[in-house]
Image (cartoon, rainbow, N blue to C red; front, top):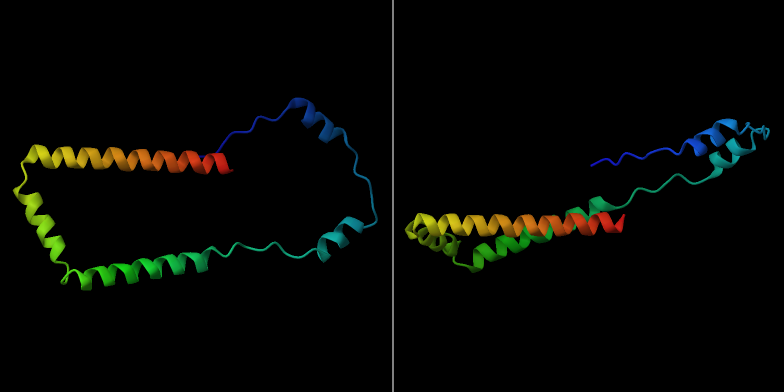
Length: 111
């Protein structure tokens, strides 16, 4: 969500009133010699996390007798009363919403 930043009228007037001081190209030369900004190495982190997740999923599937636990859970859900399934879905949704809200609040405090 983008935040709307209100400009202070006094700041705006001071910026407009400041004359440009000719420095004979000094600023341009300094800017050209500065190193280019580095991009964060998020792609390597994402690849490592994705690979670890995939490896753990495959390992869990193989160690659980080829996903036997998935069939058991589906059978249990199919035999549950509809009110129980609704309550489980509602509680899961509320829990995930609360966790997402906490994550968003933590992110806004960091920046």
